[in-house]
Image 1 (cartoon, rainbow over the protein chains, first blue to last red):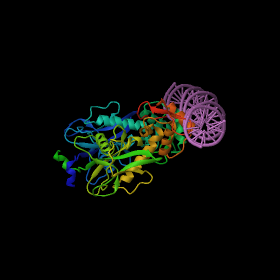
Image 2: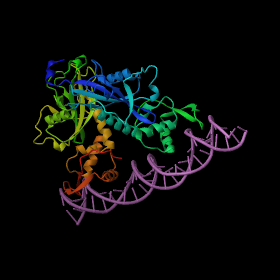
Image 3: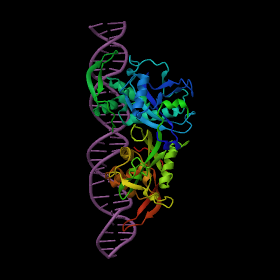
Length: 222
Length: 222
DNA sequence: ATACTTAGTGTTCATTATACACTTAGTATA
DNA sequence: TATACTAAGTGTATAATGAACACTAAGTAT
């Protein structure tokens, strides 16, 4: 490191994750229990310091993989938080990311159980470390906004699904009801869905066609 | 700084600005000539290192003020760039901002002339230092996108203006023509504009009503 | 007085969004 | 094996929005 830089602050740089999933009809976010001071035993966003030679995106993927064992999920950079005093020990800049994981992809064999992780409903967050409450609120706002004008919800769906499940997913995220017929029309009109040919025969009622996404790629809708 | 952090990389943190204006019917961005290695004499985005105790937003405002003398302009955080190797000397994380300044607010008495600043048309960028070309491309994309669904263009207008000037501003940014009557209908329907009562008597033709914004506040339009 | 230039204004048509209710195809059970 | 039950699946009419389009008005210049 060039000594010329020493006049300036060289903060620590962390990458923190807002990891969302939906389970039990609730939008939930992943929290990690802190094992160290400050905020010992408080819940916080999972995160970690940037490593030498590691890009920000790589760091975010690494942290996610360490905590959940999952890979290849939807992830994007959210915002960078750097107010002085947000970490009482030292100056820390946090690049926040947000990620979406289908509930079905968690609790899989490769997701080693980590005892100090939990999933909290986004409208009942516990007391959080640092400014993480603020960051998560911001992440939820972004997710809700993007759900209304993009197909980002795809990142939360399992491989195959009924259209009614997709609709429910939208309803949970935007916290509002949708009209069944209009919803189906709109979704099928995007051309992003594909019938799998298989039927879901669970339940004492007419079976549902199962669908999948042609490509997992986020696009902007009308 | 806690020595525990020393295992991790402590990068330099800079704040770099994509400062836009419109002049001579072109969307332009501010470039600064570098006085030091690396990339000596190359053009770059204006920016600087984060100072001790300074928030990211404050740093962005400070840099903008140092370069242009202007304050109170529209500014937002854009994205954070942190690939290793983007600065050949050392690890540097750059939090990029974008700002909008009406051309009329520049070259004012308080804007001391800085010889190593220039305005470049965004579609004819010179060779730039670091990854600044990539960052500016990203900023232009964001500006264009936001122009189409928000009233962000307001940040580029002078205090008072004709509706035809506002339309031209939109046309320059989105690089497309708009229908005069539909444009005026839509703009007036937002309720964000206010007649000043004054007329613009320049030119050999019917004078135009002058308008102003009720409040300089970015909102999302239909 | 006339020519010139930009300002200012409404209507029609096409597209998109919204509201709304019945039939279908399975399972469960009497 | 008939009947009840449940969620799946489907179409139309109306309202709202967006797009296309041409003439008159109010000044200045000659």
